[in-house]
Image 1: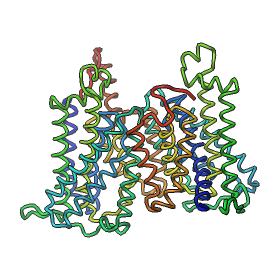
Image 2 (image 1 turned 90 degrees about the horizontal axis):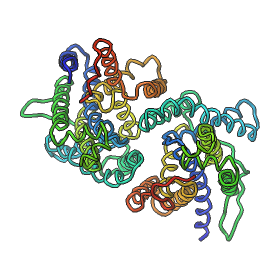
Image 3 (image 1 turned 120 degrees about the vertical axis):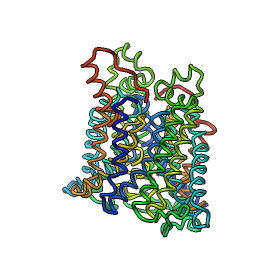
Length: 291
Length: 322
């Protein structure tokens, strides 16, 4: 029982991080039909912004801030204007290929210009164990969980309660009608790229203490984000959150109870089952787009 | 195909036969690698260029083919049978994998095949009793046919080139048969193809399964070429590499993969001076290519040719058939 709770908490923590990445992924799909194959690398990169800033002498919190700003600039605005925009007129396929190439570019860039070794990364909270019902839970997991929940709640408030968020939703649901209603559609699409960049930066800062910062982290993270999005339902934020949490919990339990060697395989098998049985995802509805 | 195209293809074929006589063993090895990978790329072109689906599993099928052939040969099965088995197994796995993925829209096949490649890699690495795990399989012998041994580099190259010729002629014939013309219809206009009564989903699945079997055949040649198999050769990087071959050469053009594979095999050698930065430069070039000419190098020359013709004669450019 004790180890069960432990696994559940750490599973929820990783799941919450997956959820952040998956939400960003679905947002880009919703508003601009961009399937971002570099999403995993987008999560890998901001950790290196933080490390570089800290090497230059910045304290951790300030380095995180710099990383988020850099991420918004490069992974949000520059990505949208330089990579996505010139490609949209060619259709989905060239853009898919281009994001795959971008993934290779980012991965190799970090490997060659920073380091090919895994880098230790500072934790959010001092590592300290507290016991709940004889289970030992690390404060780090709880801190990760808290930040991730705050990010998802914040995003939901933005999308549901503000004028800006509702304009973004309208853009996702029906761009033509949104334009008629006077919503600056192009700017709204750009904002979703910015939101995605913030989400991946937060995810990066949260996950790097666990996995260490390494150039190849993006492969597993990108796949996890997509699987989470499919499991939950590709066309909804709620779905991506649910999928991420399921995936994270499952990941931890299968590592402990099934087989560490095939830990990576479990989500893949679940992906195939979901596509077979319920291709629209657990919460998804067929052919409908909402944020 | 136009007269100019035929002439270019004939010249290239002549070069492929003559050039290796003037090369050192490493050069011949590279050309053999080109021939082998082109087969896999031609297969992927069916999936990507004709059916419009991204597959990240071609590297995995290459691996399955290679391991199948190597293991069967170790068990004493003749090479010809092992070769066939590799193709048939990959066809069956492609069918089973594509069936669920192609039921749904978006680019689900891309991610399912991404997952599949990871699974295959894990299997090759973990099931040591069968695949030798990280130690791999070594000492794979090159086949002997009726007393003709293909052990020497030049002989093996001509064997690979011969198989490339046979398999690509087979694919060419299939695409031009009454049954296979549906693949071209699929590429030109899937919605129109559907309205003409072509079961596009079934043809997409067929394209993927046949493409996968070509990956398997290619793997069965890959094993005796490198003579040492390890799981890392068949990871995601290999699949990306094959995908980029098709794209860079020109997806949907029959000879695109031939050009793409040549670039992908030779470029790393030519760019030795750039040391570790080869992949960075290559991926940047791909992004630029996608921005300005998503139909690849052959597509670029096609466009050039049409532009020249349009300037000379003021008549509409003839529709591309292949």
